[in-house]
Length: 380
Image (tube, rainbow, N blue to C red; front, side):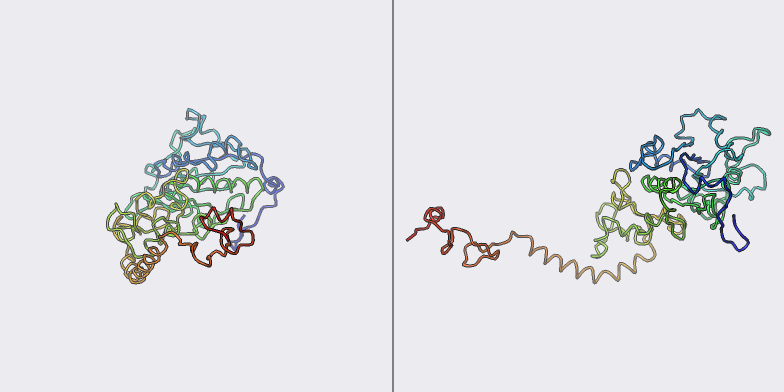
């Protein structure tokens, strides 16, 4: 619970003793009815370390049994059968569960009850649609953990850009950045447009290990992102970063050089995709010829538009690095020419650079006429 001073206290309710010891079974209620394209769910299916199938089938040691409910991945035909666990959780009859939200959260107050932006099922009594906001209001206070999947759910994304009519926002903006779950966890934000599949699965597995009592809470940064995934920039893991150091910039999108001057924001964007790749270690925007447009960042997309224009700091940074880069490139070229030859061993001189004294050399203590003969020398 939260005290008046704003600090969070862990409930001492005996019924929650299982939580402190770890769970044997947990449910994942995934709702993608936010302002969304379902791209995060689709991307999730590309994960392999581990795959979502491995987690659901119990093939990852140490995790609790996982029951996943996701409209795209569910074997259910839909309708009330699919909604049953969500309704049970809203009534407080299904616990513990992890709530995953995909898509940005629209502001229902804008339309003052006149319709709705997005819904998920209908009220069984009135037949009226249940809005996404209603489901979050019902489920978030009861969830053991909450994970926001993708940039739309974490920070609002495309739907929250300037001038949008929906008032869309990220889940942390909707619930509050100091919101804590039943498991005393903050919201876990995994941005990406869409999520990098391994990033999401790695985060989910950490949360599940914490639920099992086998790991501490995942470390998050000030924007509630996993620190170990978003603590470095695109530039730091980019295949093209060395070209930047040498002030060797691409002038078009066909060049393999640094793309800062043709619109890449990599030096200032927190993302590990170039280092990790996209599927099975392959891909990552700059690695395959794309520019970084900052899609994992809270300021996306407004702060990075217009796309494909040189970033504001690109001109200054490239100008400052140019003299240094030109000098370094020249010096490295000279050294490269020097070492681009085979080593010349002084095998026909009195002394060898290696200090090796072969048996065929004059004066060798074990030199024999036979050995000398192999070298074409006469003996006396």
